[in-house]
Image 1 (cartoon, rainbow over the protein chains, first blue to last red):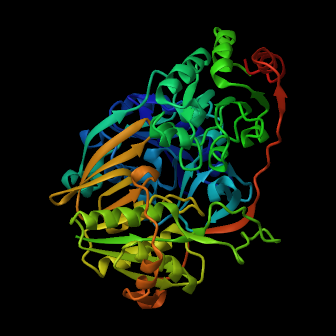
Image 2: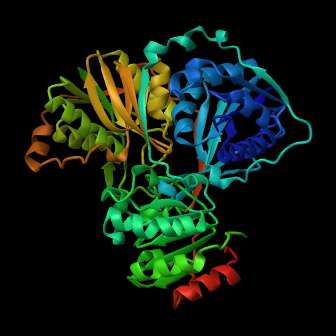
Amino acid sequence: MSKVLVFVQHDNGKVGKGSLCALSAAKELQTVWGKAGLCAVVLGAGAAAAARDVAEYGVESVCYSEDPILSKFRAEPYARAVTLAAKDSGCDVVVGLASSSGKDLLPRVAVMLDAGQASEIVAVNLDGSLKRPMYAGNIIADVEVLSAARVVSVRGTAFSPALKGSAPGSVSELQLSGDPELKEQPRFGEVLGYEQSKADRPELSDAEVVVSGGRALGSAENFQKVIYPLADALGAAVGASRAAVDSGYAPNDWQVGQTGKVVAPKLYLAVGISGAIQHLAGMKDSKVIVAINKDPDAPIFEVADYGLVADLFQAVPELVNLCKGTKVGA
Amino acid sequence: MKILVPVKKVPDWQIKLKLLADGSGIQTEGIKWILNTFDEIAVEEAIRLKEKGLASEIVLVSIGPADARARLEYALAMGADSALLVKYDGPVDSDLASRVIAEVFKRGEYSMVLMGKQAIDSDSNQTAQALAGRLNLPQACFASRIEIQEGSAVVTREIDGGLETLKVPLPCVVSTDLRLNEPRYAALPNLMKAKKKPFEELSLEALGVASDVKVRVRGMSLPAGRKAGKKVGSVADLVAALQNEAKVL
């Protein structure tokens, strides 16, 4: 009987929270699809340490590879390694987080396994169909994957992180020699460099608190002067509306919305954001939404739990003072 | 350098979608259709490469019913050279789309496939990657900048946490992100001229592609709405509410 394989992402050996959420989804899929077990694959520098960690979360086996060809993420060799791991461990379902890497590699895995793929699922139905947003989150679809082999990418914020199991699973090294084409590096191209926009703050996609700024900030300087102190007082990640990103106030990958990141933190503060549909699509599943805006008719107030009609340049510094030292709980 | 640009017609993102009474899909009768936002960016980028003398020919391909022709003509009016419509009225998933495009790719001497990272209706974000996998080509997805160097594409990609610059040999598949460019409008005279550009129609059978799909939409529903909460009078009231009522601070 076949099993479920989870592609687990990590940062130098530290397993990402989003991948633990994908692991939870994989457990649900294992149950509703009647699969015999749950396995995991971890790739890249630090994968061995991450694999030992993942083995604690109720998976029966974890394979890893720290081969230099996998040291930087590239869709082609990663997809081949994940496919190899699936075949080696008898898995015909592959699950991963719908991160930029997951989105990049999973459809290639699907082709190699002759599998259909459901993207960015938000729930697993008891009848085996899957819930996923379409039309920028304006529609929720129930989809069926008809093929024998199946690939699923998971919206991390829709599932809670997996809990540790009783007995740790086995850990072994993936033998890349099983796919001779995997090492054809020149054909895959090369990574020339990265430009990190990450500051010393939590990752936007899985932060507990997100503070987002909009066009009303007026400039990149104001964005930094007003939004950053509030984010730091709350230990929050910083987000931005598309208008703020397009105006150059914040980097591209901070954009919350239909065409950017989808977030669902415990607390979301929208500062100077009017609330265009495309922004709402990215944050309306947050637990508590706070909006601060000068315009009492701004659409953001229609989804906010708490709205404050005020000049953000006065209200936010005041809020920073009152929030310093508070902890975000619930 | 010949570029293949797959495009899809999708409902205009500015309209409010309504469900069919039986929940089997959305109402499409009489709604406004547009060229998928990300595909439009791909068409624009291909035209810019041609204007720089880096591309020689831009070929469009779409899979869909006969009325997809209007969207293809719009992309021709923007500046693409010719179009192929693979006529098919049934449901198309990313797997079927990638098989069709792969077949078209094999029939031409293409150096690059340039396409949107996702269609804004199904939001699957799969076809470019699946196509690259099927053709065993390198891929550069979520591009916010594309440069052509001798025999290679240097692509800046939008990834979690920042940007990545990737150099991939041609031929390759590149998928476009939102900030790659701002597409031009097709002027009315060009829309008239576009009707005279080469336009081929082919059936799925003639292309030799089986019509089976691997993913089926069983039903649709509207997401649970979110109700407006309350307005607070001051920053102090807001903090008090967050501490005592919402209990998040």
